[in-house]
Amino acid sequence: MNIPRLYASIQAHSSVVFSRSGGPGGQNVNKVNTKVCLHIKIQDIEGLSEAELNRLRKNLAARITGKDEIVVASDKERSQRLNLKRSYSRLENLISAAAQIPAYRHPSKPGRVAQEKRIRHKFLHGLKKRGRKTPLED
Image 1: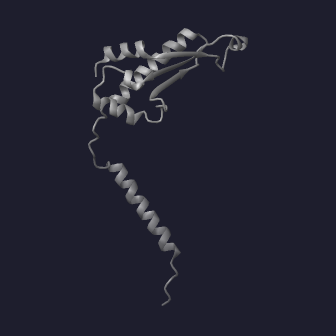
Image 2: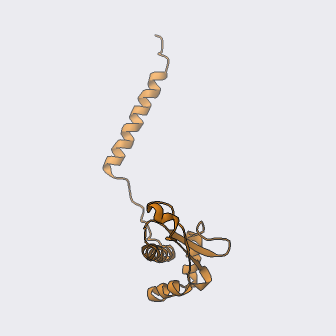
Image 3: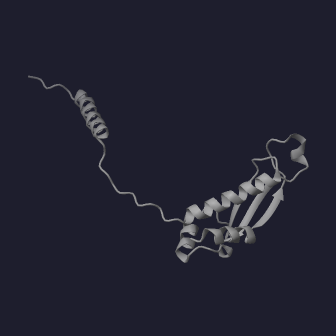
């Protein structure tokens, strides 16, 4: 992954849409377009290998639109500039995290406390079942 090239392509190829935002701001909300939506087509993203693009498509499948775009929106701040900065940051982090290979988890044995808890649970469950039996008559 070529991080500087990736970030440069995001800055160059993303389209920005501003709209009115909900949330804090009072009357300012009704007259200023502070909400920011960033759209970027996946084929325009540079700096990723073919395997990384495939991982990106798989991991971000819920965020990819029918037009093969990734959409990120921000309306947390009252400033358009801060929302734009936040959107670019979120998009960069989202793409770089989705393209990375996840670390392999080496399976390990349960710890001593977990084993004791499981054995104790089994014993109590057995007691509960034994209590349901009808007593044997001599």
